[in-house]
Image 1 (tube, rainbow, N blue to C red):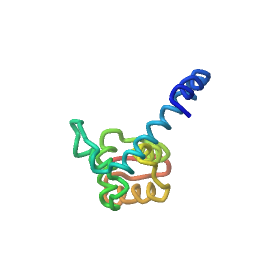
Image 2: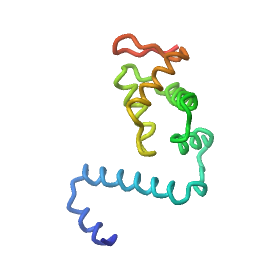
Image 3: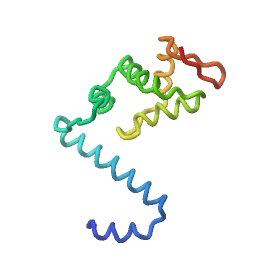
Image 4: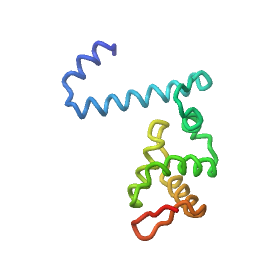
Length: 126
């Protein structure tokens, strides 16, 4: 299938379907680039340290994942447990996603470190 065929077929999609397709294509391209050229990816953002951590999140240990999540959560601070879980999942969506068990481990680690506490469905930060 060629680019032109896909382009013509995509004209028939709704705007939501086009957005989903665009997101899928970006994720597939990133995944392919990481597979074939893992060392050639360049980071050209002002937050290069944080970007480097996000590029290599699949290789991170539990403590490094918790530190990465803590840096991101310090800026956003979701107020409910479901929002917290969704936020952590979204952090890894372009790297192929993250398992539910790892999200739970990150949340438990953040609680253990005293960064946040969960009371029912509410999340409070230290």
